[in-house]
Every structure is written in C-alpha cells, then in structure tokens.
Image 1 (tube, helix red, strand yellow):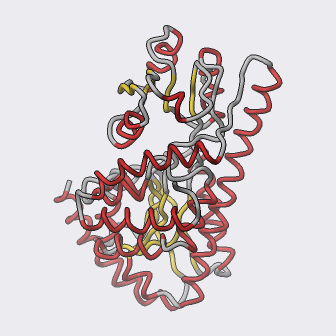
Image 2 (cartoon, rainbow, N blue to C red):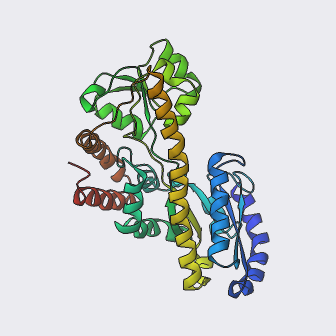
Image 3 (cartoon, rainbow, N blue to C red):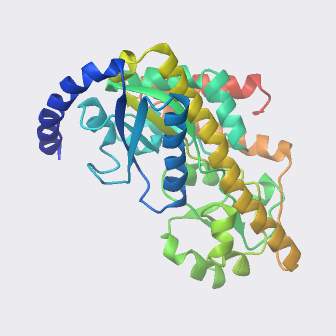
Length: 340
C-alpha cells in the first residue's frame, strides 16, 4: 500500500503544481470521509461542503468523497501529506498505530458528558493548538472538530452511578474502553456487535457499550435491556477535519477563517440533527412505559471521569505526545471542575 501511495503521489504532484496557481482564485479541495455514501454522517458532511462554498462566495469547492474512494480510512493521513487528497473528515483514533496520542485525544473514554464540552476544549481550552502540535509534523493542518455525539449506555439492570458498575457483566471493545470499565469494577468482555442483542437476551451479559440511543432503540436493544443511561457517560469520538498543511498555508487569512467557521457551524448542526433523533427515541421509550431512562448526576459522571483518568495515564506513558495530550486534557478538566 505504501508503494501505491508513492505512485499516486507522483501523479498528484503534477496536479498540485498546476493547482498552486489557482490558489489565488477559485480552488477545489478533495476531501475523503471515513463514512460511506448514504450514511447519515456523510450526508451531513456534504452540508459542510456546501457551507464552505457559501462562506467563501463560491471561491472554494469541497469535493467530498466517501470512504475508500482513493485510499483506506487508515491511510488518509499519508495520502494528504503526499498530496493525493487535500483533506479528510475522520476519527482521529484511526491513526493510533502511529502514535498512541491519537487514540487518547480521539476518544478519551469518560472525558465528556456532552459534545459542547469537547468543542469548548478544542476551541477555547488549548485543544486546537494541541491537535496541530500532533498533526503538523505529519504534514496536516487541523481545521476543526465534530462528533456524531455521545453514546448512550445499554443496560438490563438499573445503573444509578459508578458503584452500580461493580461486578457488572458487560460488552466493551478491547483497549482503553475495557480498561476503564474494569478499573470501575465492571467485568467487560469483547463481543462482536452482532452478538450484543442475543447475549443480553440470554443474560450472558447485563450491559453493553454499543451506540447512540436512537440506534440502540432501532435495533431493539431496549427490549432486552430496559434501563439505558442517557445521556451516556463514556464514549464520544473526536472527528477531525484536517487538510494538507502546505495548501492551508497558501490560503489567505479570510479563506482560512471561512473554513474554520464552516467546521464550527457544521459541528453544531451535526450534533443537533443527530441529538434530535436521540431525543425522539427517548420520548418514545418513556411514553411506552417499559423503558426506564437513567441520567447520571454530574457528581457520578465526575467519579467515572476520575477513574478513567487513572487509565489515561497508562496511554500517556507510551509516547511524549500522549503524555502531552494527558497533561493538557487533565489540566483543562480540573480547571473547569469536570474531574475530581
């Protein structure tokens, strides 16, 4: 695959040279998403592309491509640096194989209780600068962040706080999510998503890290696990919108500001649209009378976040960049009263 990227890079070099002259006028930027065409997230991302055109008076066109159009979702970072594509819309943690810092910033399990908390960290708490410290050495410029939202938590038993996690048999993916729940006293196991419903129904597990509330409801999980925790308290991915740094540096300040503003507005729209679906699902569940939706208090969320932070330390020890992410993140959380 590296050979393919080098070959594509040679082809891209010609178009890069030709497009340099166009930077002073109309520009077309090719971005690849990590979502497939037709996916709700991809459809919303197309709205971001339209917003860029609107904010730049039509001088910048974003050609948004679905996942694997040119390279695999784990290879877009290299493709951007090589000039094969201009940017991507993707989960930061896909690049954890290069540096564990990408995993920690991409989904610091337990850090956020709402998308706005993460957006505040990115835009006002040092997260933007931190992302560029991580991305610039790879030839990328971080423009901004979005997210599909905070996952709910599926449970067949009432969970009113951290103490109720002790001994809980649950499904969680391997890695940091499992480590955090184990540290909280739960008994996590790794199961494919296709086995979650059956395992809950047969009481092999009592709970599951799965997806957002509306997706869980649509797949019937609340029929066998009628005590969902919503809003969730554990998992929310940071989806980055980044582009080739050299091309970014070639843009004038007004265009850079327009791109940044477009991402921030798009992020709020995405969160709002997807959250509305969740709220509709919550209302329907409550009206049905068979599902009890549980919302943890701020105090219980802070307790879980403190436990999670103890596991972040292990990731931080794996690279200087991961340590930097840990330091910046925990300082911000403490200063804003989000961690005990």
